[in-house]
Length: 319
Image 1 (tube, rainbow, N blue to C red):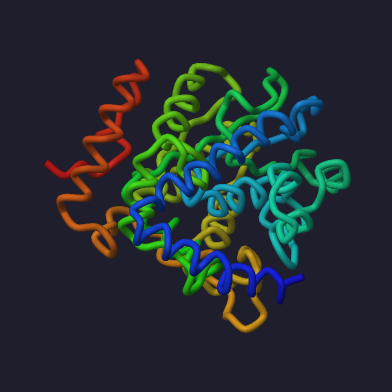
Image 2: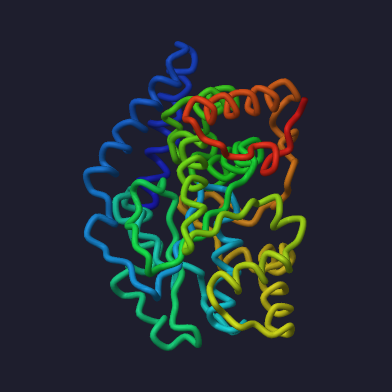
C-alpha cells in the first residue's frame, strides 16, 4: 500500500499539480478537493455519536500549532510524569483519522479502545482533534484545551511538514500553498481565522482553556502550571519540573519518533514532527511583504467574522 501511495503521489499527483500550476488553476484544483473533504467531514463526523465524559481532555488546534506539545504536557500531568508509550498515538486517540485516507486510518488508537485512562492516576485521557469547535461534541463534563499559533508560523511549519512527510517532490510551490492558505478552502483545516474565532468564542466556558503558542514558548513552566490547575491536578514542584523536562523542545526533538507520522513512502525518509518549534520564524519561507499580507488578511477575516480575538496578543504583527 505504501509503494502504491508513493507512486501515486510522485507519478500521478506530481505531474498533475505541475500541470495545474502552469495553467494557473492549482488553487482551484486543491480548493475543489478541500471542499469535498469538508463535505465528507460534516457527513461522516466521527464525533457525531460520541458522548464525552469527565475523563476526556480534548486538545484542539489548527494543524501545526503545537498540538503534540500540548498533548505531551496534558498526558504527562495525567500520568504524573510517568506516561510511557512507543508512540503518543498508542495512548492518545485521534478520531479525525477515521475518515482520512487509508494510510492514516490506523495511525492512532481508536477512541473505543483507549481505556488506559481507567488506570491513570488522574483517571483522564487526552483526545486530539483539528476540527473546528462546531464539529466537536459539547458537554460540561470534559475539558477542552485550544492552542492558537501565529498563522505565519503555522504556514511555514505546515508547508515543510507536508512537503517532507507526504508530497515530497510533488509538493506544490510555496506560491500555490500561500494562495491556498489565504483561501477559505485550505486543504489542511480550512480557514485559520474561522478556527481561531471559534475556539476563542468559547473561552468563557469553565471547561475551556485557550492558550497561545507564543505564551507556551515564553513560559513553559507557567503553561504547565496553568494546565495542571485547569485539569484540577494537584501537581508538586517536582512533578511540574518533570513535566517541563518531558515537554521541552530538546526532549521531544530527541524523541521525535514518538510523535512523527511515520514513513509513508518506503524510499523516502520520514519527515520530522518536531522540527524547530519557534515563534516568529516565518521568514524561513515568507518575505516581509507576505508576512504582512497574512497579518492583514486574517485580521480582516476576524473582523468580518465579528470576532474579538486579540490577534496582536497571540501573533507577532509586522507593521
